[in-house]
Image (cartoon, rainbow, N blue to C red):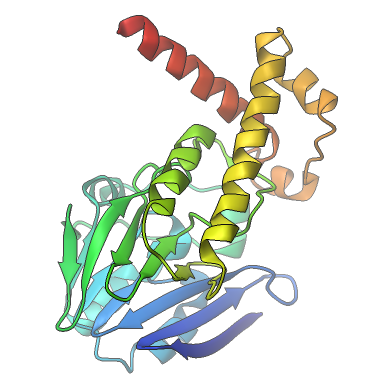
Length: 279
């Protein structure tokens, strides 16, 4: 089942698109359109709906926040349809030349995305006729992920930085400490609207981000304390009474799991230790 909704906040048009192979979608992707700029392209399983809504707009540029399939699934089709340039971070441009393989769960709920060799790397900003969006690196969920910040309007197009104030599972290559640092970086900005790719927020934005920051900080502290005492990842998981979504873990062959969050903290600790030794 595919479900779509549209809404507008100030000058920003939002397209909320959800797909599920089993009943009503539980997680939606938001595409944002402002002043000729389309931010992200949605999942390929909803390509008909995306093309039906977005195809009627006057898109002059596309910006992709990161390489994940729910953000790049329709990039090639939309770029060809509008005959326009598409931009991303340097790391995203490289990753999209040969996108990483995805799990069965990701195939089922999002769909895959083809390679793209036409993305143009940007570092500092992207401009439209009426706005200038600063490009801010926010790695952690994805190594190439960036946000777009419009300081005069106090808008932040935050990709997957927020989503919710707690997280139930991680992909294997996510980093807890990087997400902590990315949230801290964003909290230094003057923002009033959070155009999240999955869960946009229009009030108390900083309070919500602070809640997520505290969640990650507490999680990191709990896991790191037990790791330093010599506990194994499985022992830490049991000691802290964590619960696994076995359905998601099974479908993703372990690429999406709560255990990945525990292992991320341990990996972050080990990387930090290596850096200190190198210095």
